[in-house]
Image (cartoon, rainbow, N blue to C red; front, side):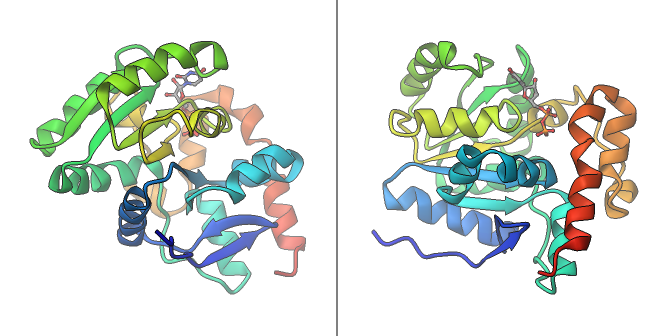
Length: 245
Ligand code: UDP
């Protein structure tokens, strides 16, 4: 089956697909029907900066079935380039929409990653909202290759259509690409801290702060260890301001 190409833009040379939530769900459906195995990544400025210095990660994003416009910085950069994106599609916002679609279509989900027990609570919360949703399995597992055999065994037993992987970038994307062929699921989505939010383990920034594009500041205030990772954000902003398109 031929998979339609989605419209993509480049932010500092890194691929971002111009899709909204509805198009994302349609594209995921198409990827599932195609019969192959596909990565779905949620691209934020940290991804962009990593892909610029890490050719392997750059290739991983190029090969993805979808590169969703996640971080506010990415949509800002796109607007500045005169290529506005339809909306932000973050992992944590996508999951309930995906769960609704999965419940309707009978797609089976598997939740991999996050701290012990966290994915189970996230799955339970989603099942309360979408009673016919099938979360076929949850496993905290290990992000590195040493945990692959156990995780793949559990996933194989659960027969999911979609595996959501919460190990943070780039571990989750590398996990998916490393195991893509052996993963008996059509789509693997890297979802970062989404299970932490959905389970209520970590509170999400209030909507008004998110609207102002200040979610990162809230996360930094609550989790100061993020400062090191976020050090790339001013560099990202400067490079975008310097770039012509
Ligand atoms: N995580 C994990 N194993 C690891 C590293 C991370 O399970 O070896 C989980 C962590 O518990 C969290 C998620 O991966 O649930 C990453 O969350 P983070 O908020 O850092 O991701 P972001 O949303 O910023 O990409």
